[in-house]
Length: 260
Image (cartoon, rainbow, N blue to C red; front, side, top):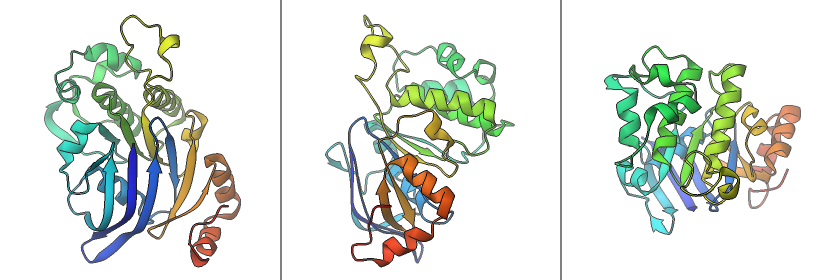
């Protein structure tokens, strides 16, 4: 689904990603840990094609196509979706209209989709205007549900979310990744479960999202380098016990990529 090969990225004169190599298979969910300022959000913004993130080396290949220099709208049309940590407020654009635009001509029922994330009452409000942290995350999920991406990028889905909203967001994120958001005609939900899984790349600090999704692999991004590949829960427990100091040791060893 996604191949990142020796990716180097700079913001202005500062290099923020240094030789990233990462492969994510179709239907696989990958968890990315790392301290603040390590380059996690920069990686997602680069994959999505935001300006200001200059690729100085390497390639990004999505579903067999080199998208390293592709504009953002082409990446979205190809099937990459993103939930931002702090999405902007957009005055003058109703949530309902954005959800319909995300569907790109497919016939959808905005109310039915919004009901799944308890968001019907927000459809006719401006995008993120006066929304709480949990409401913003539910709005982001609603947009992704309408888009139906083949790969979704989550930038800290737990950020600014209380425990009640976390449960709803976590469950819907799992359904999105498992391909259970929109039923296929003629098939029960049980019969189609797992047939159209969405690939995922998820940034997390707290690890709360791991209580709701089935994560396959994980790594730590530290100082622009990937290191410490292991099972996501093992990485989380190690970080909780020892912090990120072990990552410094990994990076200083030959190869710079060692297991925990």
